[in-house]
Amino acid sequence: MATLVGIARDKGVSGYIGDGSNRWPAVHRLDAAHLFRLALEKTPAGSVLHAVADEGVPVRAIAEVIGRHLDLPVVAIPPEDAAEHFAWLAGFLGVDSPASSALTRELMGWQPTHPGLIDDLDKGHYFGKPIRVTSSDHR
Image (cartoon, rainbow, N blue to C red):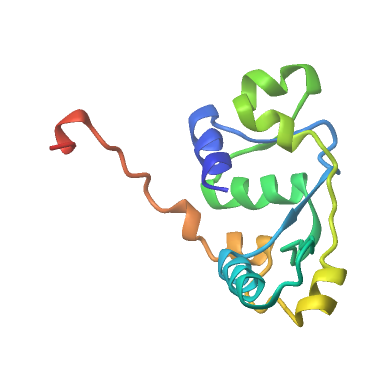
């Protein structure tokens, strides 16, 4: 999310690709860390786990929160311009990739308890003044 916020700041718009209906699965970092701990302690050999709390957040909804917090317009970026606008992140933003953790929750007894992506973004943690590091800061 910090990268998307940085791109929006740099470009002066909060963008999404196409109609923005493609979805990202998401999980709060503390919920993911809890699942990692459970996995290390008790995962049966050969298990595949999915640390997913939000099965699919529309990218347009993410862009709208970013735009609102940065007071920037929210705009559709045509797919052919996505690589230029989003750089390396374009490939991830352009894919519809919903995912489920239903089997992981059943196998591990894991339940996410922290805010979902939109609620977490809306808390404003990602929107403070950006820190600029200069070469003189590296001693």
